[in-house]
Length: 97
Image (tube, rainbow, N blue to C red; front, side):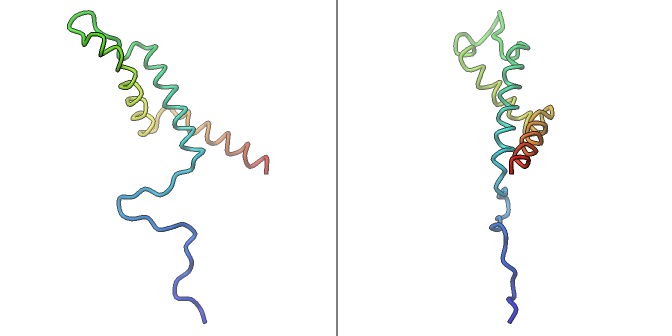
């Protein structure tokens, strides 16, 4: 007797739910996000203005803003660093096996 339904290889996702992401890709994106955050900081993004600035609070929390802006850049495709890292690490992983 043949089964009516074939077994699934992955659990189904609900509408609006994202499928489980590859941990290697997530780490590559996190690294690209950290890199972009540092580059945005060196470019002067988030520096307190001389006049009408937010004071010491603005200086302390500007790194959080830069990190979120960098994460948003990566979510929109970034500069391609995460994909390059992911491809290189995937090849290295497959070569080891």
